[in-house]
Length: 581
Image 1 (cartoon, helix red, strand yellow):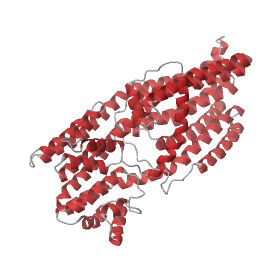
Image 2: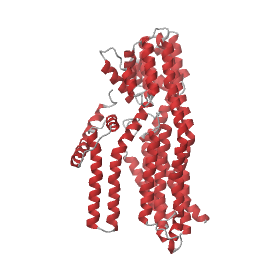
Image 3: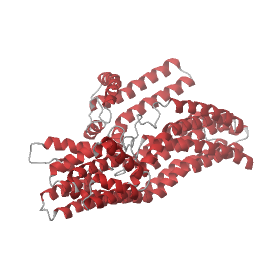
């Protein structure tokens, strides 16, 4: 499959070359042999990493080894508390890079698989439509591969090409490759292949079974996943939010009782250990998601998305300065870094990803009207009308903004005499700036129907029914997960910061004397504030990933809003609690 823009490949390869060379040097200098697991190799291939898997893994271990040695030598030579702190920080950073190289790559690959499998219902339905139009497994596979532009469609098309010239269609090989992750996909694809060899009178029933199989399989997988989440998420909430904040409120009393609570222990616990543990727990939960229905990827080349993030960075800097000054005046001097970090990073993320969110809202509105449009067009095709005439009448039955898109395509086709696909997807077409796999498949199906004529009426109607059923599954999935994800989101943006701010204020009121100086506001406030901001980002990412699947723009936008809310709530809670006590 070709990418949307071939010009994007060369710069990526060029920028990856120095990183590959650096990784090779580190791997060569590593004193030992690293055994690479098979799943790690598969993860590197799935992520299209240019360097060999052995080089990547060995290089990450090399960073950990040489970084730790360098930090140890620096501590022994320079000495002093500052050197020790910096050295320990460098050791932690080096070990983090090694952990990222060993476990981050498989997690990224797993996230990509989860997103990929979200396209399985649409791919199977496209196969069903292809097998309905042409009773040939090869032609159905070619149609599905051409109509899709995701990884799943690319793999299907790859297997089809490999099977060219043989008695096989490539469907069986494709299905077996995904059996371990999504058994319903293998069963559904197998039914499609069986249908193409079945008698004509039995074929519609077998194809309908294939469509129901993938939809029911998706529904069952997500229902089981939602049911299994409550216990682990409750554990994350208890040990990641409640217990750490409760411990912080007890620190002054612990110091008074003679328990050593030093700055390094406090910073290490709330600045490194607890965030790392929470990050691991979030990754583990996200890795258990069977499939995801992520929103459409909006490229930077989209006309409604800024070319560079410079504007959002400038806004973030201004907001950070304002947060620094405002927090210092309203709360205390120690609150300035918290206000600057939360306001600055939150504003930059929200501003940077807001245009993407607006484009996606528009895409969702268009997709919501596709079932009605396809149903109207399919009925008219059955009555013998052409696709062009059916689309003209479908404008009145489709809701906005879908009807506007269809009307623009009809006008473009009449004016330029282009094909149906060209009117929708060609340069300047009605869907040219709508980054949606579903609308693309619909446009290609309508273009095929224009060639086939009235016999394509039933497949067009079936496609509309499928899109409606898929939207229903997505709604059911999100409804099943909503109670859990809403709790996480509210905790990230409101409840966690509220408890954290009250904890700092109460600890300050308890620690007014000299005996509590080891946990003064100037130390406890920034530490708890930092942890509150970490909670805002991680819990928001977890909530969004569970609800919609991991997506950089969606997570970035919601994390930005959560940071702004968490920062304001934390600082207000500190002031309000101090006034009350």
